[in-house]
Image 1: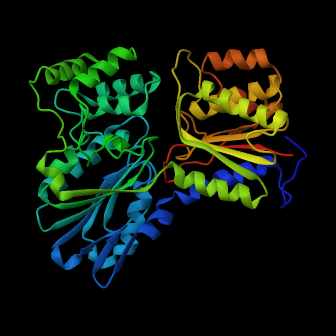
Image 2: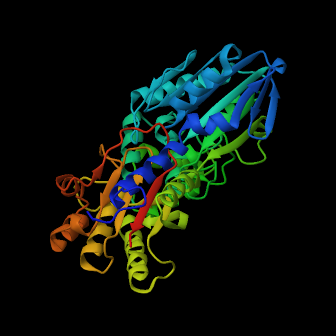
Image 3: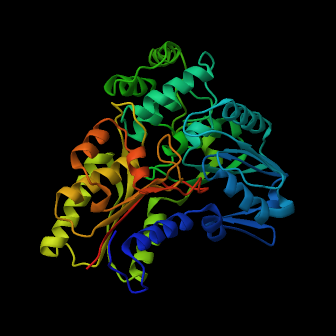
Amino acid sequence: MTDARDRDGATPAETAREAVRAGIAAARPETVLGEAVDVTDGRLRVADETYDLDDYEELFVLGGGNAAGRAASHLAESLGEALDGGIVVTDDPAPAGPIDVVAGTHPVPDEANVAGARRILDAAADADEDTLVLAPITGGGSALLAAPVDGVSLAELRALTEALVRSGAPIDRINAVRKHVSEVKGGRLARALAPATTVGLVFSDVTSGDPSVVASGPLSPDQTTYADALATLSEFGVDAPDAVLAHLRAGAAGEIDETPGADDPAFDHASVHVLADNFTALAAARDACRKAGYGTLVLSSSVRGEAREAAKTHAAIAEEVRRTGNPAEPPLAVLSGGEATVTVRGDGRGGPNQEFALAAAIEFAAGDAGEAVLCAVDTDGIDGPTDAAGALVSRETVDDVRRARSLLADNDVAEYLDERDALVRTGPTGTNVNDLRVLLLPE
């Protein structure tokens, strides 16, 4: 893409890839839990809290999400004989000793997800005041912990999920709907586990860092309502199945109990620790760029909105740096994270990070960003309904601006990027702290 080299002789494209790899590695469960959880002399430490294992008759691990499999594997190794068992549902299974790891699907739930979530609810019902539960709750848990309410089938839940994902609604609004058609989400798992002592180990994939939004908040009080869920469907034009609408309308009319709020006694027994978030990955990627000789600027870990529009802002910053040296002189690494979205209007293939990358490449080709290189990925390794994590682009990626813009308008960017060897494929990474972007501006 460019002949520029960093202090170690790597090209900007190579450095961008390495920075992304470093960011993902920093957010992996084995890295995060290795620092946050340990057992010494019969005492379990989780962040700044400790638990005397002699106070409990049983210790279980129950949870779900993209990172839950590897989290369970690490916990099984760390806890050793103190651990009695557990169940987690993940799309990236790993051996976890006595913990049963259920292989589910993401981002659309399947039969295995429902079966695994039901088994977790059954285990929760058996827990009592002498039980200690460690609960890894991570990005992807909204799909993986799928236990639809009575009257809503798996097929209807799948249709709802697909419509929500295509709507362009932000994740907190999407999850307000999911919470109200689930037996697990919106604090309902905490209610099922009470009076057991429950310790949530959260890997946040949401821009707010709010644990009530991560995986739709199975262990957290819910501030949203059935009316909020209906408002989301209306505002974003989501064509929900009739059974979903009937359930939400019954809830809004007071015919069905709301999700548990902050005053629910279930939360007296549950604590939640956010152990990793988007800035965990951003900070590691920033360090990798500094090591390569770049100055660094972290824009935000909360970039959101339409991916193609957010990309234009990043390209504009690249142009400003090239023209004026503001806000900093090159060589410069501009980093951001968060969760860009796509409102699907066409019928092509791609994902938010691929659309972000192609939109930026179009601006690079049509503008004055020089030798800018951008790598944009979803840290879970899955960008939209594709096998790519995202893409790595420069101005050379786009040789026909008009065609590229047409494909972007039709949400059909994956094949175009693949033809140019621009797709980044990592496979499932075992973690999820959402989008990570590295924009390099060499001298």
